[in-house]
Amino acid sequence: MSRPRIAVLNAAHDDAHTPRNFRRELDADLAEFDANASELPPSAEPFDGVVVTGSRSSVYWDEQWIEPTKAWVREAAEAGIPCLGVCWGHQLLAEALGGEVAAMGEYEIGYREISHGGDSVLFDGIDERFTAFTTHSDEVAAVPPGADVLAENDYSIHAFRKDRAFGVQFHPEYDPETARDVTLGKDLPDERIQRVLDGITEENYAAACEAKIVFENWLEFVEDVRASADADSSAGSAGSAGAD
Image (tube, rainbow, N blue to C red):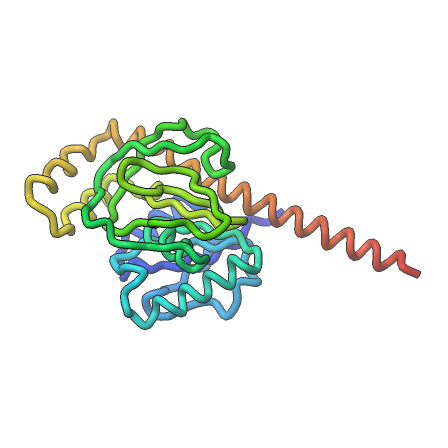
């Protein structure tokens, strides 16, 4: 079977780290689209899955590209295409499916501990308490109707699932270079910036690499969905052939 074909909706405003990180972590054939420029595929149908990246925007801002991106993602998810949203993508996916996103009134940033419930395919093989790099001041305040919260910490919900759509608030794709550059770009007190920079160590990055397993698990889920669809199609064809 060929590698899965994944549409990557890049909302990161020309950040050079984002394409590099996702190309490294997703073992699939990627078709990349500049969501900020309203560049979206005509349809999700040719793709086996969809990934939505982080962004410097908030999902509730009045920017002309956000609503079309949200509508496209909603249509893809409702069509049963497996979706994975990361950080801003997690928030967009939640809002697109009927959840609520709100400002936190504070900032979570740095390598942080997160807990998951232990019963989701997305976190298979990941310790129930794990480390990941986080950077956000908005949160999924309420998951979509019918969705399950998969992971959280003292700041916010960090993962949810609704049907074939998954969102993670943390950044499993970050490498230390990305973490440093993002931290230096934040409008936060110098002392806090320095504390976060001091925490970007080889030890913390090594611990956070466990969170990268979510990409492997999600791609396995995509493969399972594709295999099931192929099996159903084959069964339908066989039934039609024998109908006479």
